[in-house]
Structure formats: C-alpha cells, structure tokens
Image 1: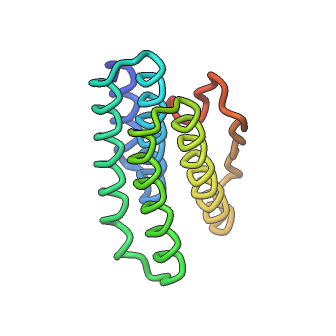
Image 2 (image 1 turned 135 degrees about the horizontal axis):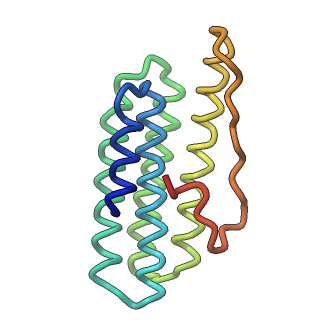
Image 3 (image 1 turned 90 degrees about the vertical axis):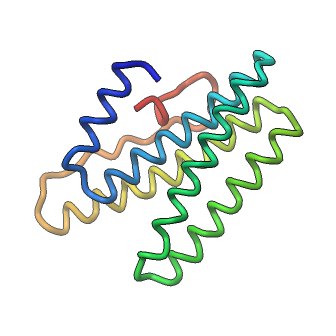
Length: 149
C-alpha cells in the first residue's frame, strides 16, 4: 500500500461512523481480491498468496462484527455471504483464474454499494444533506473505481 493510500484510509477512519468503517474494510477486501487476480495473471505466487491471506484476515474481522447485529436475518445473510467469499477465494487459489478474482471483487463491491446506500438512507432520514451514492461500473475490466480507496 502506498503512503498516500495509507494516509487516505487513516484519515477516513478517524471520526467515521460504523458504516463508514465497514465501507473501508469492504474497499480493502475488494482491493486485496483484485490484487490477487493481478498477481495470478503475472504468475506471482507469493503476491497472490499474500493478498489472498490479507483478504481472509479481513473476512475474519467482518465476521467478528456480525454477532453485534440486532437483526437475525441480516446476521444470517452476512455470515452466508462471508462464507461464500471465503470458499470462492480458496477455490480460486486452485483454479487460478484472474477473471474469477475480478468477479469476486465485484461481488464485494456490490455488497459495499448496498451498505453505502443504507448509509445514505440513514443520513437522509435524520436530515443530513443528500449523499451522492455513485454507482460502480459493472463488468470489471481494468477499472478500479470500487476498490481504489
């Protein structure tokens, strides 16, 4: 991670809401998965393993927050989603498909967008100014709009 990216993440975490912190973790998770795909494309096994290992660590952190939720349906849904992401990430280690990593990163970005939308709804409900919920490009490609932060 570059110094600029680290400074951005640090400043965005200070004073952030719980959903803001969650969005930051989703950004890092999607970035790690995408970087695993790039490393796979470059046949860089150590980098692929390093990024995948960090993604698994982030998944563990996300799962550790789930029991604090008051909504049992949301809790079950998130646990199922995280289990799926973990299984796919491990499967991609053996399949060795860059496209699979990109698709998985996009699924994380879609979940992130849902949380961002929830944050915008909560802000508008309490009278905060309207929040711009930028949609992420679908299809992946080389665009990193959803995991660049």
